Each structure stands twice: as C-alpha cells, then as structure tokens.
Length: 367
Image (cartoon, rainbow, N blue to C red; front, top):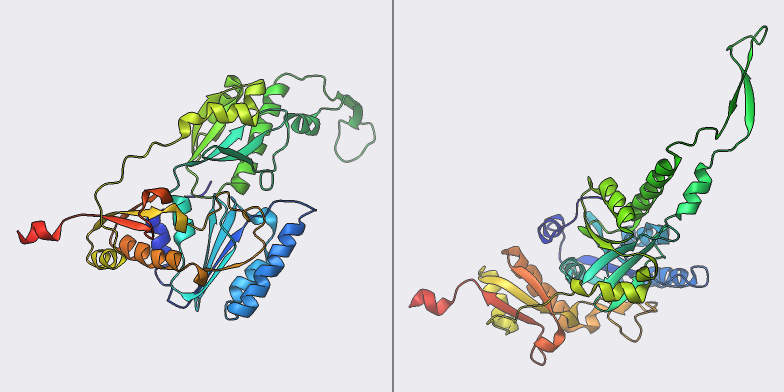
C-alpha cells in the first residue's frame, strides 16, 4: 500500500494550481447490466467536459481511457490547469461534479480524508472473502473493485497432479541414458501451509489494487487462527490491522455490523466559535484559526440522497454556492495550519456551514 496523502501533502501538491483550474469528481457506479452505468456516466462526463471545459484536454483523455478496474475506492478527483494535472482517490463516493475556472475544488476529498466514521472491513471467509466499506450504520459490499479468489480457487490452482512422467538422467544425447521418473504429489507435506500462504497473498494483492492510498487501518474479521496468520503476513506494510475474531454466521453483514458498533465515534461538543463567513475569512488570512468546523451538508459526498445510486447526471457546482464559498474559506484556513473537523449539518445554525475556533482572541491581545 502506498504512502497515504494528508492535508499537508494534498495542499502542497496543489500549490501550483491557479484560479483557472478544472476540477472533476468521478463516482464509481454500481456494476449493473454488464457495466452499462459506467459507460453512460463516462459518456456524460466527456460530453460535460466538451461543453463546459473544452480546455481540459488531459482530463478528457484521462476519462476516455479510464476503466472501472482503475478505481481505488469509490471515487476519483481530477484537477487540471495549464501545466498541472493531478488525481486523488476517495474512499466514499462523491457526486459526479464539474467545477471550472476556479481554485482547485477540494471539499469532497478533504471531507473524505477526515471522515472518522468510514472504515474498511475485510470479512476473511475462506469460502468467499468480502471487502466492505462501513459508514455509520451501513455495510457496502465492494465487489465492484475487490477481486480476490476463494481458498478453493487457490487450492485448485496449486493442486499437484498424481500423474507420472519420465525423463532421462542425462542432458544432451539420449544414447545410453537411464530413465528416471517422478510421481507428482507423492509428498504433500507442507502443501496446506503453502496454499494458505498463496491465498493470503492473493487477498493482499487484491487489497493493494483497490484500497485508496490514504487508508491507514483495515478491520479484518474471521476465524482467530486465519485472521492471526493474515495479520502476520500483511504486518510489514503501511497499514495497521484491527482483528475481529468472528466465524460462520457472525460474518454475515447484519451480524458483522452489530459487532462493529464499537467503531462509531462519539464527538465532543463543538467549542465556542465564530460563524460569520466574512469574519472567518479575515481570521483565516491572519492565521488566527486553530480549528475549522465544517458542515457535512457541503461535502458533496453520497449520503442516502435520492439520486445517490445513479450518479449519471453531472452536477454543475455553480448551483451549490455554499459549497464553493466553503471551499475558499477552507483552503485559506488550511494555508495557515488550521485543523479541520466535519460535523453533522444539524449542529449548525440555519444558513451556516462553517464555524471557527480561534488561536487567540483579539480583545485579549489589546487588553
């Protein structure tokens, strides 16, 4: 697994981008009708780029050649301006969006990076390993991107045939060479351990191919012995394993979700803060913001919306002025080292999406 991006590395990597940047968010559609949804979405994305952002040729080419197997997680962000191009993966699924001729639009990817409610869970059932994305009280099967074999598949691949074949004991001329034979499968000592090792490696390879780089923790549920051996094999990589000892019916989604309730995060109450957009902007420029609370209502990430399962319409972000304004203030606050914390929309006053905790109070300095 590659080194995960952080707020700082993301900010630094986009530092050279101008206010003429095209930002595109691509959700991973459900696989139905042999990928028909993806073909429709891909066509709509290309059409939107042609109509609204004709200068973004690298982005257009990227979308034209993008395959579903290239997704690591449930969404991709793309940024392009003259001379710069960058992509990033998201664990959660964003809405399909196009933002043109503005500063890089970061709100969805920042919300995804800081989301403490989302967890990746591997149900390590030898009969059928399943990767889930857990968000609040939901488990979503990631069969669109996770392609791992069953233990039986690996066993069949490694099966040692009991046939007998002959060869000569001499290389070169066959004259006067004595015959030798081997009975394949005569010695099966250690075969079970080797098969298990290959199976675990195949699962790790499948995880490598689909988990976003920022994933730092993987929850693995299964038989204690199986999970323990898997954790040993993956232990040297840049990801920590949290073991959940479950077996049989306890690995079914409903039971598994009940057993993962301890993953839910209890948030502390919001601290005293300011919420005026103009005041937040001024304090951000002065480096006064210690912590910026952001409403999840501007994240543009899927959250049980009516059209969340389709994602075939490309949103014009200009229709979401609150999210664009939030993007400007978040970027300004991040530039001076502010921490970000996303909170439920219900914790904000009507019409407000941001609240800032200050490092110091101006009145205290002038007193």
